[in-house]
Amino acid sequence: MGSLEKSLSEILVKDIMTRALISVDSSTTVFQVAKMMEQGGIGAMIVKKDNIPTGIITDRDFAIKIAVEKLPLDTPVHKVASYPLQTINSNESILAAADLMSSKNIRKLAVVEDSKVIGIITSTDLVNQLAKKK
Image 1 (cartoon, rainbow, N blue to C red):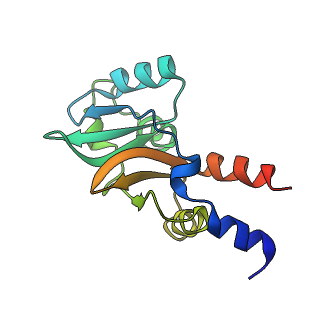
Image 2 (tube, rainbow, N blue to C red):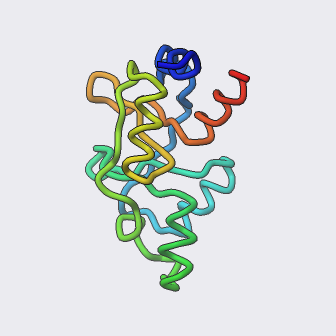
Image 3 (cartoon, rainbow, N blue to C red):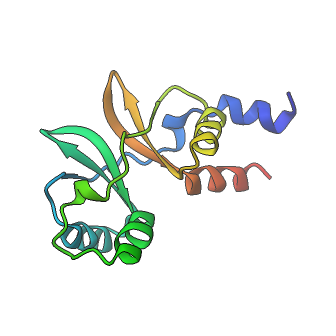
């Protein structure tokens, strides 16, 4: 294992994840979600059904699913969100997070602790951490 790989395997997801987590009910319209994302300056929201996190809606979903398919703005978010919610434990290394993102071809992971979603880690978080390691 190289020194960079070793140092990345020692940094935990919980050390660089974002704890500010915004979620929406699966019946929320894509317009409402877009407004919340714009106002919050965020690129993803956790989608809940019966108050249980089940999926994620990202800015990429807007570009790929909503714009391309020309869906109406009153479409419920559950029709375009990504399921199932991909998660990683907060005590996993950021190297494990990068491997999971790469293998699933995704850019965001919900972070769980004791089966509860406590944050989110993104590919941007990983890139920013790598930039600090130079």
